[in-house]
Length: 216
Image (cartoon, rainbow, N blue to C red; front, top):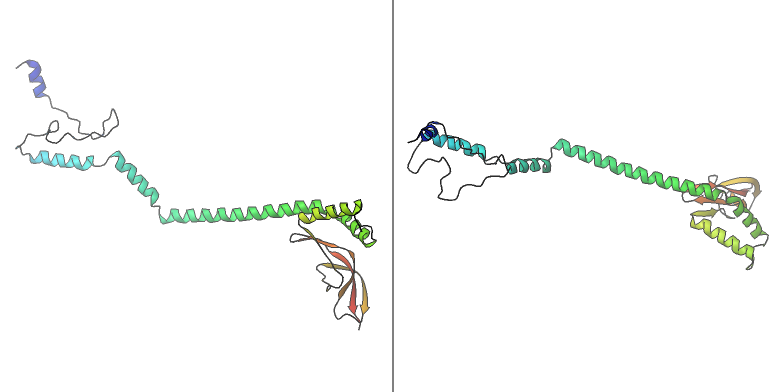
């Protein structure tokens, strides 16, 4: 026996039993059936300490990278009650934020349209006076322009109110003159001097009216 063989025999044999290869990062596959692993005791040999050591190694080797990733995913999919409560609170706050934003957007839209339509109210008043004087009868160019203008503001949501004979409403009507009458039992609109206008749910202007009141 040579000196080199004697030296190798005396030195301890170190066998890497890690299931994950430190160089490649891959999980090592077990040896084929019937082929003993490197450093495994031969058949028939019994060694209690070796069995215990082997059992300890198997217990530690059961924890792999896949096991760690699966455990992390399970923790994410099963959040604690505290995390679930936080998620519900954030969801409710976001829903309320969206409702407030949509409501504010609608208010701003109506305000912008109202500011534009308010500039046209004096023009609409002139059209009403012209109509009372009979200037919008027939198919004249003036009547056509008036119809187009009224149709345009109606498409924007503008509606007129204030009719002769309807009950007087101080929230919608502005009385510029009152006259007693035995023909009415409640305050009633006798004449509309200036038409009132609504834009959606917003009152742009009250109607200026003459009111007849019940005589004493």
